Image (cartoon, rainbow, N blue to C red; front, side):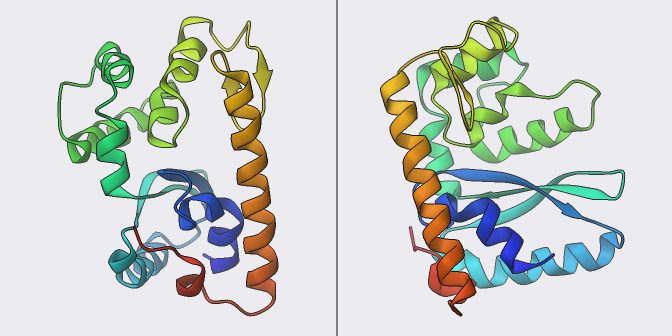
Amino acid sequence: MPEELVVRQCAPTLAGLKTGSLFRAACTDKKALLAQIRDLNQRLREKGLCLIPLRFRDGNALLYLYRPARLKIDLKNELARRTLGNAGYLDESPERCIVNLIRRFQGEEFPHEIGLFLSYPPEDVQGFIENHAQNFKLSGLWKVYGDEAYARAAFAKYKKCTDIYCRSWRSGASLEALTVAG
């Protein structure tokens, strides 16, 4: 898995602006990819990040880079807890929630509660689920059902961060140098 892929797909998470990022990586050799994941975890753990595979399918891996400390805070939100409860999650630790998320990714139906693990506003995740991805106010990195001004600002901030991180990567910055501790 190229580190450039991690930078391009996860810049806001690396920068500490988001709790987590979801991305696909080609996976022709599962054992080799798991070794790369272990290596990245050793390098990024001290900065408060963790990379895990959520699913392997059709020659791809769906990977989740996240900040466990921030996820713990995000999942304490009352609407987030209700949304997870409605999806079959028990009132559990973030670690158990991730185990349940992985289990749900093994099914046929996409677990739309994933937005709660990616810093999407809980009202937008709930709105997406209740409205079956229809009737949104704005569409960008996610479909917006709540605060449109907040979402526009977040979309712009994440894009600017990604542009800066990609330029820095191309100029020789290492993944560790681009990763903010937190």
